[in-house]
Image (cartoon, rainbow, N blue to C red):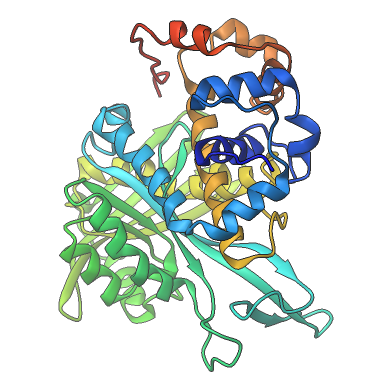
Length: 403
């Protein structure tokens, strides 16, 4: 029996997602080329003669705590921040925007494990068993959405009386986020579910800024109070902006709104477009002024949707196949999820890195094709350990393209 070292198998797992193979069985079909083996040996310092079967990777993931891969993911982000790679992507030049959102990642017609969440289908009346995750992603205006922290939303057992939920997961996730980045200037971007006094207090106690979607259904009494204030605020609390493409934004903001022991500020933006009018509102602990309200809204509150589009949507529909059951084992499935997050971060850095020239991007045709080109290169262009060492003998920098 061939014994594969941990780094070799871990890189196999990362390639499964970064090359967008789509299923575990494709490791055997797509990565068993001699050239791929030379790349993995050069990368890990090993001397393997074959790529392990997908079942061997599964054996590893069932027995490795998923916290091992979570630590790799977090250390990657910490290194990017420490190296100041993301400095020019901060909100107001200071705050890293971290968006939080929950998403379903897999569902079954029958109970998959004792931790399944359950709901009844409104159309068929059948019980659906599913799994969810709460993700914290560092997001930027130019479309980066990199996993920073993860909390799996799951029941403690099949006989529980109250299911786990996104808000409970939030209270479990926040202490880990604070421990991982104790001094980092953070602005949390949250949807209306989090418009609650305990969430506001937790952000204040953590010395974080926050921008929370403010809707009629979230804190209804305070929402009505804010709408009333909007009708009477002075000219100094209003701003109108004319943007390209015949877009007009009208801002109204109010400060010092009391909610229990906390106070917050609120911003409303009514955006007029040729195709219609939309309204947005947020509560925040940023100091809101005429000069700052549009920046806070457009470069802060409006960026939250990046976690959905550049985050979950890309991972579900962009070749990563997030909703595919890579494993039915509770621990292994979490490891797979975290390997996907690691691979997605690597791919985003490759896509936006300075080594990918304009000419190359034009030749490739689309971002989605990069994984196919890289896979072909791995499969057809072998590399020796000596060549690999020579390639990295001298330090060099790969910079992110300017946002």
